[in-house]
Image 1 (spheres, helix red, strand yellow):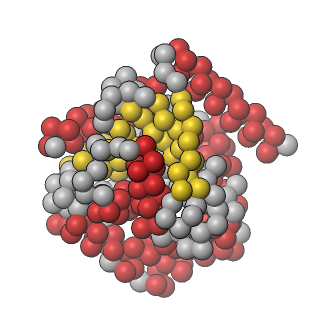
Image 2: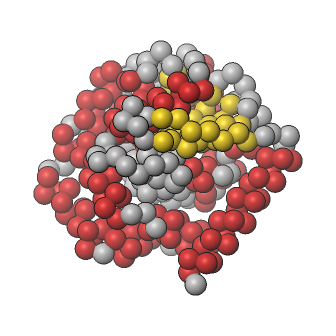
Image 3: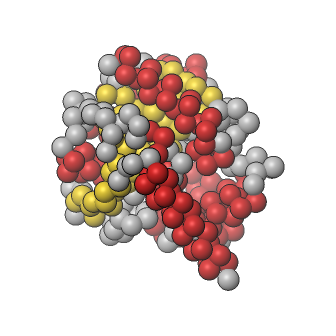
Length: 293
């Protein structure tokens, strides 16, 4: 019954999203790109200006995360949403879901669409992904914007820390994900939103999701979370909530061109919790990238 309710909810959301696109005279085009390891990467394009905004979801989510952003940003930009390998409508054949492999998923879409000026917007886990993508494509990516991510790129984790943080998901994936999502949202969050996010994230294949999680946090064991920025020479902007404190002083030690905007009174999913405020703040962040380019 829960799955049926979730399916109906998603259908209604996607139908409303399509109607909004039609109402604003935009047309969504769907495509697929092939990554360097053969994975099929599903994406959508809504035509706008010359600069492309590519929205990348976080761990165990998919491109529907950005349903409230498409109509708003296509007034000025080409908007692309995509499913990373192992998520959504993309293929699930990869053995190791590293941040670099995800960056190559983005590269495949950029090359397929023949894009020359791109701003990457990445949520949560995708903060590390877009940094790798900026390093990979310095002539294409003009800026990266992380959404509630990279709170401290210099923090160091041990392998024991990583194992401890992964254990709840390995013991019982659905229960672990339920606890994670509950802790990532404010106590007064809308119950329907809480249910939607929880069930969407918990519906991922556990083995694949845990592999992704280990690689995501593994950056903080290896030091790659900060080291990648040695090769990132474009503006790096964060649009973060205050639920998990951001250490901007530490971030500034590693990131050459760093700035941050805050979404007040939000949890880990501001694009869903406070879409209007988020869109306005993200637009400010985008303009700050363009003014630096």
